[in-house]
Length: 486
Image (tube, rainbow, N blue to C red; front, side):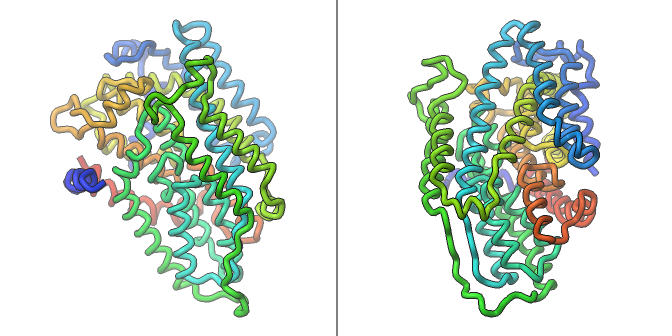
């Protein structure tokens, strides 16, 4: 905590804790309705606790479906997600004053979210990277560092899709399970912690009113420490792995196909800022035409369509590009966005009523462990809402999000200010997404691509026992001691 207080002002000047997590999530079902209703928070409506059941059920099915009942889940996940979302949406539409307005606002956020994810996926899918050289510890390290950096520009999904195949190819003959796991750790998760483009939780925060460069300003030091530590461990493991049976006649040449898509990528990034929340006075289609999307989303859709139509066919074929991953995300998240409306309100109300016992430490570990065990995007929104509820603020109000971001004193004497809570929730949701294959979208994608090449990869339990527990949890504990031990 002392380090945080010393470093953050300087930066501005120059520019098994599982119980805590489970308990925090279970409040939505366990807290009695009278207690929730009595909470003094600026939330217009506190729903009954039972209405959070569809949200919890959907997240549990997302976590267990691909592992325990893959046949049913593969064929019916769309119906499950839409049905559970429809149950909550119907209740708000019929039984809540202003419920239709809440649903409309949720639809706006969903369309902004899916526009970014889908457009980045399409644009990155048309870029093919070929590296004609043999893998080595030094080359692999540079590739992982490069992936960590560009994941903040093209997203963790885009960076993973761009680099996993060349990474596997150059290491042919010497691939070990840790090669794939550390790629997931660094490129698929932690690398994307510096911008809202990098990881879905941070983009959701951006849509709620967190300034674009806030995460860079506050998370750069934890990012550097985490990436450096993981790269050092990886380097030691890769040195032990030795050389493979690669060809000595490789030219070392780097080949890029689909260079045109980099122009689309620049246009896509520029379009993110075309929003009244970012550019004061910028026209809003939502307000002018009463639409659930704006100029930004229209431009993203247009860029994605043009990129797909004009992308290099060889690059698309070599990347085995198809729309199924985006289709899956679209169906799952429409259910998540709908079902999490009451969950967000309930957890904010509960946190406000129990502010004295909700510390930075609980927020860090609860957000993190649930991000790894379930899904980091809705977990981020839940605990952002909870943290703001503790300070008597509403996460659905952009002006109050601005107050929270700028920093206000805690209602509990001696507690950390609001910026530390936001930092804990933001960092934990991104970093802990690497704990399991289900924590973040790129994890399963990278695992499946590696499996298709015949690479030995750990199963779900092996991933946790051999890598997450001995590598990630100690690292996250050190980061907690440095920044959040309040």
